[in-house]
Length: 477
Image (cartoon, rainbow, N blue to C red; front, side, top):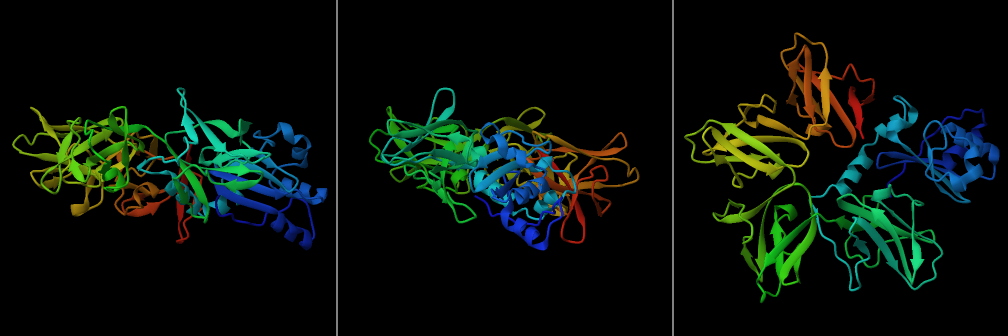
């Protein structure tokens, strides 16, 4: 599905210039979902094929028992065979399994575009499914197993299911024919899934699925959401149509339509953990959710219903007992000023909200005055742009040893947009320490010691930033 890059792999054996050029034509590497995919032409010239495979730490013995090797490691260096035909042999290996400084790892470090594309394709706030007149071609059973189906009267020989859930494997999910329906069962994570069918070697989208999108490479994929939330509206028996709009879908008044099922209006969707405001639209009239007691003021002087969906986090502001109103705002709610009113108690103000795992800037608004959290020593930014920072479900601890005389140490990287005034690190037992949340995949970072940017002296993995400097690199599984 992704754009591939071809580069010269040095042979372990000595060949003529003509033979080396032939390797460039017959060997191809590409990056997909954290893996390197190696495609090799299945050449009749066994000597050249041996050399090609050896250059990638594989051997020709791989081809001796292909029927038993699919999906298994075929060499000590970790390559897996994922596809074989008379024309092509395809292997897969995790980028994390490449040694630091290897030519393959360095080659793919030069191109972050594929990772950005993958995150863009799958990291969504919300989504709904829609199928054509027939029954849905993707169905969930009681055990959270999903059955993908292809309805066809044609005499296909082989049909496979390929998608983001299996790293676009061409062999992993063989579909089976029964009464004119090809089907296969798959486990899916919550959220957005991209997929296609491979019918007798040809890729095709799901003809029954209305939801599809173009990827960055000019291809069209079908989209299916593993849903985790449901909007429900009781009564309104006479209504002709009902929609729901909110901050999760850009307040698109036609984006999510509810259906009348068992005496109520309902819509199932995938909804990412977080805080959202919303309203129902009943025959053109905007109303708050009568069944939801959680409400908040909006910029128009009236109210929106609120969702705090996911694991709850407590934000607290001590003191300020004389304040009339205190509001929490931050990156987790797009810095909305009106929505998150805190509750006053004898010792301060408090609110429980759902915030998905991540690193967030935030502030309190006390009777219209914006302030940082006086109990939180971690900040980012300067002057009026100085914010407190909270780390939800922090999973990695950065440690910088030494630098005992440093006055200030900051952490900056891809996780905070390489902010000049990054996250303030704390001094503990002679070391500078900060625990933050990192997503799966690759993270680049540096420390800023009293204004001087340095790579991590304890991390041997680094890359050229392309700006006459280097960045430290780590990978999260």
